Image (tube, rainbow, N blue to C red; front, side, top):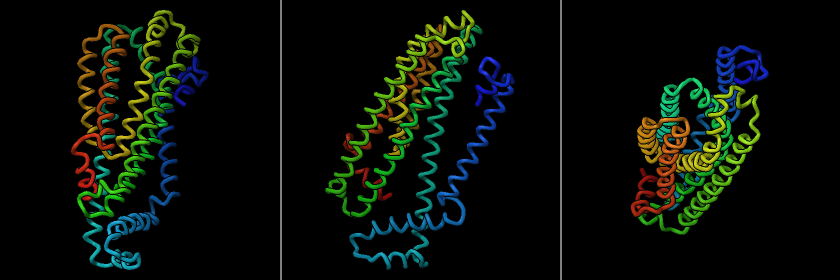
Length: 333
């Protein structure tokens, strides 16, 4: 949409920056309307919302009472009584804390990325107009490929969230401290391990495909995408092989971070993105040309985020000694 309104060279209306701004605002309004429609039709807003919360809470109470031989009818009656109000308040506070942690992790994730790009662009502007033009074109290509790669990350987050919730339900059904070693919990942990391994393998595969696509663009070098300005084109073509080599790293980072979010390991994500951003800016400050900006600072940004995301996945899969006890503590918090 932005390309359509951005200029005649993009087969658009020739509105330039104004067209890009209008197109961006229109796409955001359209996206908001679409999301609102989906939320209402799925019953997540409006009159059906209390009923949905009640169903989730009753399912949680059923799992709590599995060892107490409570019947579902008694649980539903208790849910509607005055005695259940403190439990409802605790449930609401837990939901609010979960939402807050998720928001903090998303702000840290997106903020670190935007901060890294902003500082990288700032460094490019000091190297001349041709350099910053090539940088912006490379960034546009990177964004298109990365958005496609992140589609698998959305699926990874949804699937991991589902499997992690099932593990929490298993742990909730046992009050004893060794519940994490029970057979249902072990089976669920194996499913989480299998999902993590599968999505990581998928991230590497689609990263290689993304690298191949960027390399094909480099070999074809179409002027309507890569500009016809000789100086900008020369710098961009010099950068594209490095950009292609980064795609597996970018893909692995996006998907592993999605797995960490799905598993609720928000501290790993928030801390890792903050540290990697600072390290990236340190390297960017020493970059002397466009290739070093991308191969140095940008690679450092994603490498740091990937390392901390992998640590978060190892934590989820029980590779740390303290994970065995904290899994139950998290569930009973």
